[in-house]
Length: 72
Image 1 (cartoon, rainbow, N blue to C red):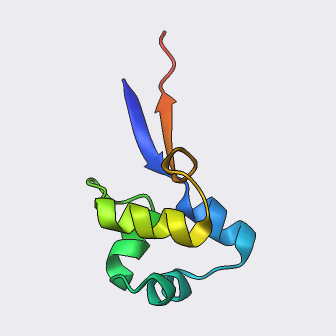
Image 2: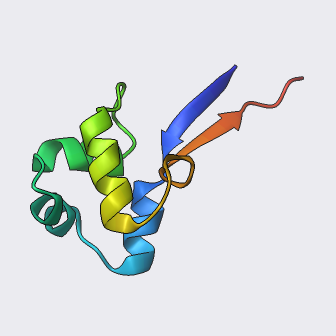
């Protein structure tokens, strides 16, 4: 089985951005940005992803990562 996870924490940390600052700058609910940052979100709102991609100047494939679990 594979999984999709958020890479927002790595991107934000590399750029010295706090969750609160990101949420304020993109005018989005702090709690939703926090959930994505902590990779706790089960569904990804398209509006949030679009705002983050614009703000961070990245594409969705940079913001979200698809990982395949190793087969045994």
